[in-house]
Image 1 (cartoon, rainbow, N blue to C red):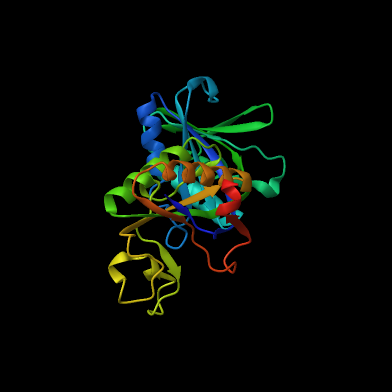
Image 2 (image 1 turned 90 degrees about the vertical axis):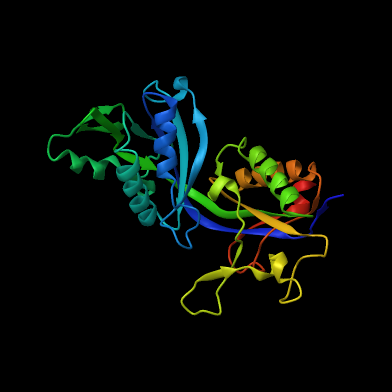
Length: 294
């Protein structure tokens, strides 16, 4: 029987956006989206947290081509704008046949970030814009034709750091359960899991014995340290994985966590489902596991 621990995941406010990346075929769209999301696991060491939300059918994209939806998060709008613009410029503009569109609209200028409005300068004066209704698109000449990029992209108040901690009897059982939970969460809209494959083996705590580090290994969840340091593990828990979830709303993260818990509970060898928090000192969003499961 899997224990659902009486604890909560502590998450914090972020600024989030959605981009729709399209290309001639689904393979190229996924390549561009994957490259966009590179080195974007945690704002502890990255300029943003980003991930693939879902594959989009041609009938849903602005230009009728295969697409991929990506979400990106940063602590504020200025940081998000810098990260998104750099990533689109380096990893989408450069990929054959791609285009990039806003996945979130905003009527308020204070909620928008400039993407095409900045990347247009790469056109060296040969770029030009076209306006459709209230949306402006920049057409930048490139060697296989044109790169189309939306002028501005809307942002919303997002949430980062929703999480689940899955404790298994051994590495194989914990990993299988985490993969199952990740698969279930991927079906939930408006969320991403920014770490590799949606899984985290290196859970962290705030601070370190080394002054230069902002974060270090969360020793309480490391099974090899049982007997050497304070632990949160029982003797039957031989491996632990964490799933970190960023979302565009509190309800989206709650739905994702519930889906993950449901999938993990069905897996053999899962001893406990827990969550990471810092006693409420890190963020204002608290997701209590027992309330989620009812």
